[in-house]
Length: 84
Image (cartoon, rainbow, N blue to C red; front, side, top):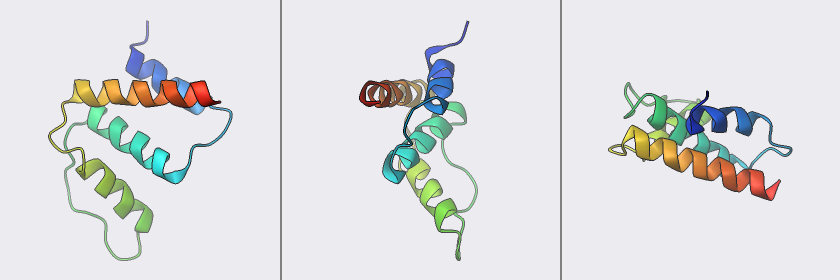
């Protein structure tokens, strides 16, 4: 039996339309915070713009509990499913 967080990870793969980049970054950050916890390591630099944006989005959630991040992730995926 999948948890709501695991189910949302599957559901997001099945969305009929790809969310915008801002939503994708939010999904990435909430997923990482919910599965790993606070960001670690150095921010990618130079010309790794995507890596830098992902790192910044994740770092913005620093201090958010994993349970809270998972809940926000599930809520966001549910809202995306409703729009599809």
